[in-house]
Length: 164
Image (cartoon, rainbow, N blue to C red; front, side, top):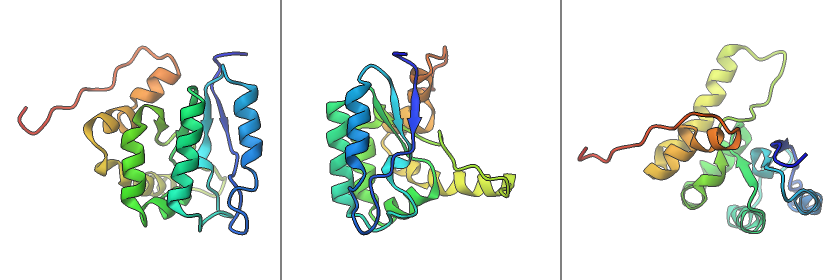
């Protein structure tokens, strides 16, 4: 039904062909333009670890510009492995599209993981958040985007600059 958020694990591809599966996600986005769709892990996976960050961000920008209901999830340490090496590329992108990014909405669950494992993953994937501008930090880290996506009656706190 329209307006029901859906999170999809749709890998872009793999190291041999980084965009092999992109047509599948494009088909979903074109087929369900009225549904909020969250693209888990920005399309990365353990099989796709060497994609050029400029190309990756370009693909994400193109999809966000074409599909107004698309959001990107930036949880899971697979993403950290990408954006900690090319920080500015991803930080600039997150700042520019901060109203379309969700943090921590889809950590990979496993029966063998303990609370400490999840706490470590959260800390690792949250490292990028300290480099965001104030607007992006409010939208992403403080949950404004999530509250809006889920139609929740909450407000993310407004940040003050260093002068108060």
